[in-house]
Length: 356
Picture (cartoon, helix red, strand yellow):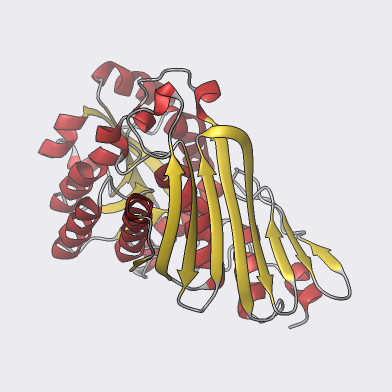
């Protein structure tokens, strides 16, 4: 296929095999992300509906439920773990601080419910391993919520690389940064609390985007890492990575350099250089993504119709559940990212290359 044909071809939902059926979701964690992005996306979804909401506060859960007409059950976290109202939902979406993911995934598995868990999938490698084991033992699906995987422009980038339109990938550069304290001025917020976030904040929360999106576009996995990181602002005293840079070697031979900071200008990008061209996503990881491909003769820009990334992600998950198919990315995919993030922090501590 010629490069222009890739840009002209449809395929924003090249994964869809199911046109009817509904997966009923319990939303575990009702923070700003769930309220501002998830609930509206599911309301517009073809294959999903929200029938249960779970929060640390029953008052908050009931307040959210009153705004969502399809909700049948409102629960506290403890009630969810104990198995209340399991008949009201089929699957669980988890969007709590990282350190709580394991408990709620394990509870969902005990209740026989499929799970869509936000990234990073846990606070530690040990948590991620336990989550995979729990879902395997229960025979339920565990998918990690990498919304870039179902972003149509990113899927187009993956097809272009797979078709060899930029030649053999050689180098990747990625950046993800934001001014966290301008977005949320509370220095006690969970992303700055090592007991809640895990190994750190910038790599766990932001660096995972270029790390994993490169995995997806290249169809390659990390095998070695190097890194540097530091924290200087007093609000970041409990985490080691107010800013971080890390290098990754993927198993296809591609070398990557990534940067992430929770205390910098808001920017996102991913650039892949091959032997015959260059592919650029900028912005890369916001709720809209733009693709440019440059070769010797011309520059192409993506014309794929924009999509609600959360709606695409939820419908993809529901499609696979209803069709009885596998999911990408499953728990083992997320577990490799957790091992890579742990290695990135280990590499910074030891000032050496860590093999995965």
